[in-house]
Length: 203
Image (tube, rainbow, N blue to C red; front, side, top):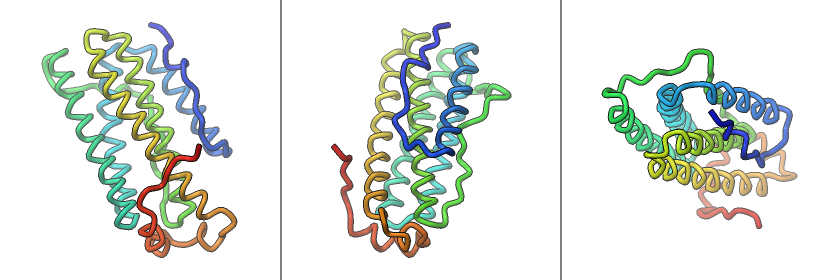
């Protein structure tokens, strides 16, 4: 099986925690590359459910505008799971997918109570989205008859990544040099977020 997982690199914040997370993700992808298509597909299905719950948790902690953003992401991950379950049934005759043992999901247990925590959680989301894109790109190569589906899902994850990144950059910009914002409760800062409806990615 070709090691296509390593054909892409991350362009993320290089904090010690994120470097550690990237290394963990690389280890996960290395292990997945040794598995059968059915096992990788099972992992992808479970990952979509995990991502859905992650975004639902972030939505519950955020204000109206950002909360709606996370709810939309959660709905998208649920739709991805439905697509994958239908494909699993088509390929293997049922929806009883197998989640490989000993391969954890990307870390999602981020305690979000301050704006700093929210930014860190969104950086976790960036890593999760990039990981999902790489898995779908890999599946499109080993299951070429379903390349259209996996290419679509990979494109969706790239779009999620770009959208989340724009919000991360916005939050970093408005909190730079403002410790009262960085350390503020998410609820307190929520009113400020409502003033900005369309953060744009830096050029």
